[in-house]
Length: 385
Image 1: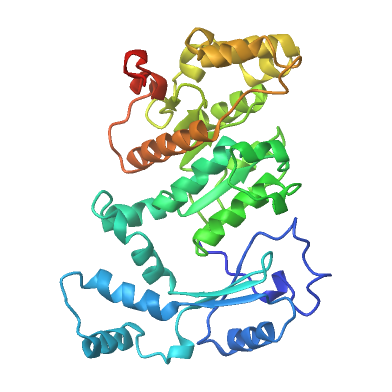
Image 2: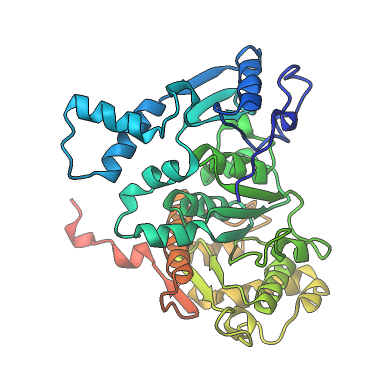
């Protein structure tokens, strides 16, 4: 699953002429025990592209030993012996993986993949057992729409829900996105797919992340869902968070055809949609709220018809007062849909928790749920001081 490119993917002799920041999102993994990789590592250490070396692998080894032996007190001498054993006979300079992040100029040493994953997810236990964690890390999650979707992807990755991700969005990061996206001002203008992929790889360099920089279209949507070469499966679960009516509809048509469950957070009143096309391959799209409308039908709609279609999908009568008010003001004194970081983070948590349970085979039914914080934590005027 891990993409392990060579430095040919990110040349270091001429860093300013190599890969542009907007294009670079894959790290390069180097094994210091390999003669070829050691030579590339030495070349990199002499390169002006290198800005920072971060090597705390010894501390990670201590964590590994303690994770494997949680009840062992380990006096200093015993801990040192256990750390030496954990290296598996390799010399200290030969152990681990060096990760080169060309977009930031950082070179970081981490544990080998299996040990890295064990330590990074150790505090999940036993809300997620190690056996379950291994199963989850073998799943591939597709995410379409990387405003709300980027937080969902990152939260899934943090929890170890998915070891492979497919990201699709045609848009670039703008200043107004920074009210809800985890990004920096230095990334304004970058493709949202690239920003999200970088966050994922900075969290876990052993992930497998592919990007669809132009979003999904009639020509590319089949590829988005299809298995990778040599694999029998494609996307195991879809997180759909885009605003384009045709994409919302076509993505569900393809998910239903391939029996892929779909999750959608609407970022209003904590609305979470679950469509279990894996269990119900004849299930109507959007819980039947849009009738028998197809993606071709949606493409033929004018803007007014598409807006009415979206309002049927999200159930206009259930929108929050603020969102209902915004509907009459978008395009006049509001530039777009209002969205808050708190709602996006809540949606990411709802998506991740639900995705984990679905992928582990827990009985999560199709349906629509609301986790409305204003209702759950209501204002109490009488208690105001």
